[in-house]
Length: 237
Image (tube, rainbow, N blue to C red; front, side, top):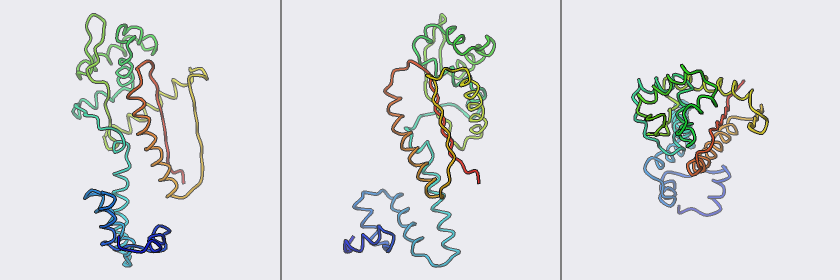
């Protein structure tokens, strides 16, 4: 970066700043791509900006990029969702559709779909409707009461018009289901705390890194049981 180590220490301690030339050399050393280098330049411009109106505009750009790059779909492996908007609405309309679809990756339910209906405690009408929906969407194939899974994993983006409705339904379904579980089959944790905005964001990033890690575990794991993981981090006041 063509600067003294002592000065770089001040930069790392937030007691000094670098210019774009130094930022460029740093970016090349770290092998940043064009998008990442542009973001670094944006941070440098913000750090050195003295005009309030421009500083506010730069801060807005920074936060917009941070939000877009810290969504779960940026951390998870990309899943090709072949469903149209109308098909997505049909799939996520009822939580039973997704639960049944995921459960059908378990071998015992592929061989005996009636067992799945009994274990989920669903009436025949709801169960048959979900199976029909999954067949119409070409996600499963049923022949001689046995199921062939065609596609096992779909991802609903946060900006989807169905996201919040789907999330609310899944949460309510989960709360209802948890009531009937034995202690050994569930783990619940809730905490309220006070902190600043930066700490809250750091917690969110840590969870996304955790999500990336457990995705690899889930991908390698045999399909024996169906689980659900919920995590909500939000501002009360």
